[in-house]
Length: 267
Image (cartoon, one colour):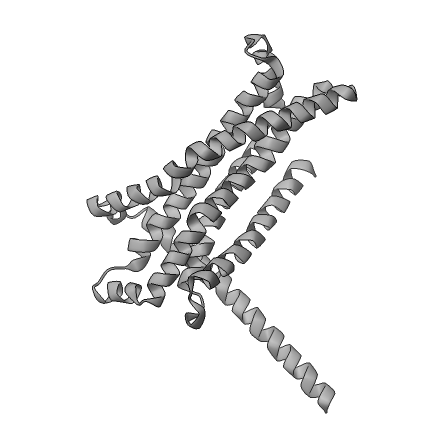
């Protein structure tokens, strides 16, 4: 009898966890669909909303743009030097730049940009949204006829997406320039070979995977913290719990996206 009760309780617990898990991801998908409709709605770009959206985009991008770009330039320089020196010592110098482009541009920079934006912008924004919900500010907006998804969530999500894509694209360009200068110096004679090498790495399939991965990263780091803040447990809707929920789910999705991109690129 005890074994039957224990097995039944385990099954009930597993069923409860599965229902919670499905409900959380359904809410995330529903929130994403709502925001997608709002993005294409003309009312989202009225004067007051435009100003709010522009302020969030500026706050999420401008303060971190220069620092992240300089950091990527330094990392690119160090990594290029290490890879080229190592390849030269093994007689594989012809593959050094290809390895640098693949490691830096395809893998490291999009992932680093997404995590940087998440830690600096979107997770704190989600925690701020959770605090607003805990204080009842979102309910007050609903009582006034204001949709908090439109007013508070949409600008934060759009700014997170914009910031991630901007940092990734700009840093990839900087990394490519730094890799060229570190290898050829300021001599333009190596530009033709470098361009040919870049074209060999970035074929149609790899380019498509790169674009999709960067876009999915930006969606993950922008949507998940907001969904965790809005649909979290009301009894634990504090800044710390919202940050932790958003962080765990976001890392799981980012890891899945990265694994799928690696499979697509190399298998």
